[in-house]
Length: 452
Ligand code: ASP
Ligand code: MG
Image (cartoon, rainbow, N blue to C red):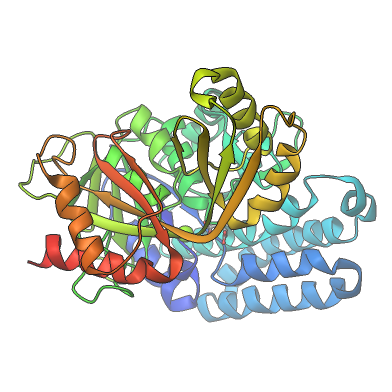
């Protein structure tokens, strides 16, 4: 039995948190591999540093060193502290070299990836030494050491699952077979030509799923600071309840469309190998969390969970008789996707195509669409500051009157629906409302279908 355990930033954010997490690892049966985020706040700090590197180098290194040494000094004494420092000092020197590499700063497209990956390189050292201090054989592995291989564009990488399987099957599997617990850096992998490539903000969950896939783990546990997937965001809906079981499909729809529990791409690598995933709270290890797997017990409920993804824009693209001209649809979509930005929904009519994208991507997308012929695209309207409401539940496709019920609740919340996507997924129904009405809609739906 091999369990891959991932701990997030708040779970390793203080000496007490690291001690709590080390106990959770120690108390887990069987073989284990651990994946960690940077200590909370560190990645944000590093992102800030990238904006003004030359002036801040020494200050950055000092602040960074102090933050990590304060935790190390609280956790370790004597020989353990010495052993920690032996690993810590060369890593800090390596970070210094990155910060002083002006050529890379100006010319290497992966420079920001490299700087922001530094946090994980140090949190993994802290946890690994804590485990060793408790008598648990452990080694801190960077993604480079472990063989986490990545492909993709800077700041937006993904795991190369086949290569990860090959590489980790040698380095990391051997460590685990010897009964040693590897503590692996989350958040980034390494490209075939040795560039550091991050998986996007919050990407350590995804990194852990890639590791679980590569090692053919029996279980992936994502330890975070909430009890699991909830029926709605508890900050918006007071009566939100935890969900015990979900399918991969339900969890990935919700994670993608707004629930902030998991990095949205976490499900895919584990789903591919049918590895069950548990979301658990490291501050309440006695709680069972949410179990996500291929199947779950059916429940007789229309709506299990509702989430909202905000800061989106609808581009309404007018093109005469687009319905008869599929080549135009293809051209438009290929222009929109040139930058690999997410498209959250698409809807068509005879002469318009409506596409939902992030507010931040509008400007560049419009620029690219400008390249198209005037005869293909007559006009483009932008409706900004929209929210996508994602309803997930059993029987959404098969129950007569579901849409009526759901939109009835939306009407009660006095919200206007700007776009609808139904039928694309068997487990979800999504629609778009103005962002300032999103909270009222989520509350109304939750109240009608979950609380009552
Ligand atoms: N430390 C990275 C971030 O803050 C990755 C993660 O925590 O998942 O985005
Ligand atoms: Mg996270």
